[in-house]
Length: 193
Image (cartoon, rainbow, N blue to C red; front, top):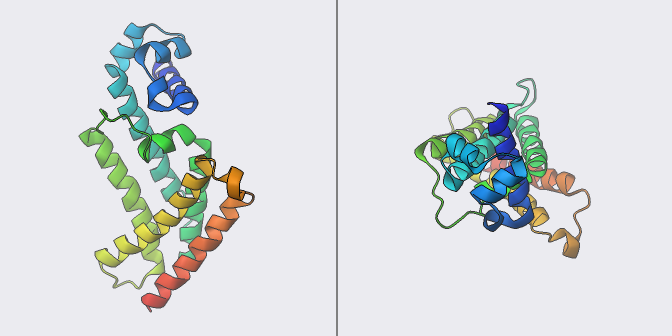
């Protein structure tokens, strides 16, 4: 990716964190990146293109987090490592996480390319989760187990990012999330002996 394109995405991420989609416009992004509005249009064809690029980049980060797991671990430890990576990624790339999981412009619809990247990220998690299931577990069991685990880590991240931590406290939130995932893994394994 060229430097200007990355400057634009970094600027858009910063603006998104400051004020959500409402803060993100071609003019504000150009000003934040120190580029002309023409530069935005030449790289992304406008606001929708920027949103799509951030969406794709966000799910590529999720996929990378899910696949950066050692194959030398037990199935449970492999899933826990993938979840740890996911939690760290969500904290490091908060703007992307917020965009791909909810804070979207009503007019923005992910492109076909963006949807393919999102599906790959979920497949990476499903692949990891297969390690805690019997080898003959069908696709529905793998998918259901992946959804259960993803909902736990997503829930913890969502609560933290929506400032619920000011009400209930978020100290050791990653450890608490991983303890909950471990309990879900044990429950899933008990259901699939």
